[in-house]
Every structure is written in structure tokens, then in C-alpha cells.
Image (cartoon, rainbow, N blue to C red):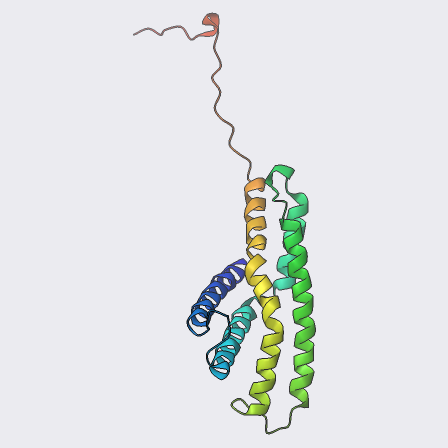
Length: 182
């Protein structure tokens, strides 16, 4: 699951970087898009891509958080970063909201007419709205999800006993081995 989370964080960065490049190129100095429709479509694509990338993490996200919280509680104080606890709380809140939005989406999807299929405005518009509602919470996971990986790394390092440095102990002359015969 950590690899999935790490992959999501990396994929999200690429998605956001591509969005930022698009946005910079397609907006004026005042921040308004040159073409509202094209800009909106591209933004919807960003939202959908981020949601798709998170699907590999979604099923194990609660387990990742619970594990990180347990690891954090057992880390020695010198290994803890002060922002980790806050980040885990932010991730938990975002996941709670994503779960609630997912339930709302299931109800919305189930309430759509039978003719609403991929490629039809009824489904595509509802799904785009769902992705737009989820995006800020997904961005929270993209921004702070690496804390879970960092906590795991710190826990692994803390649980590995460090090898003691070799010490040099002087041996009294009387205890030294006598030279043997040749």
C-alpha cells in the first residue's frame, strides 16, 4: 500500500504540474481563462485523472492512516517531525470527506436514468461534478500523503538497532599471550 501511496503522490504531482502549465498558458495576467469552455474541460480532466490515480490507494487508505498513527505513537521523540500528527489529521479529515462524497456519488449514479451511460451528458456531467467536489481532498492526499511514507521510514529506522561502535580496550601486559615456541 505504501508503494501505491507513493505512486499516487508522484502521479498527482505530474497531473498538477501539467495543469499548472496549461493554466499558465491559457489564462491572462488577470488569471481569467481565454476560453472558459476549454479551460473547464481541461480542469475536469485534471480532476478525473487525480481521482483515477487515487483509486489504487482508496481501499487501503484507512489502514495506512491507522498504521502511521500507531507508528508515530511509538517513535522516539527525536525521530518525530512536529507536523506529522497534524498531517495525519488532515489526511483523515480528507478521507472522511472523500468517503461521504463517494456515498453521495453512488446515490446520484443510482438515480440517473438507465440511458445515462459513459459519453452521455447525464452521466459525464454528474461524474465531472463529483470529481470537482473531490479534487481538493485528493489534492490534500497528494500534498500530505508523503507523511505516511516518512513516518513508516522513521519507524523502520527506529526499530533497527544501531550497531555499536567497536571499542578499544587496553589489555594489561600481564594478560597478554606469551609468545609461543617456534
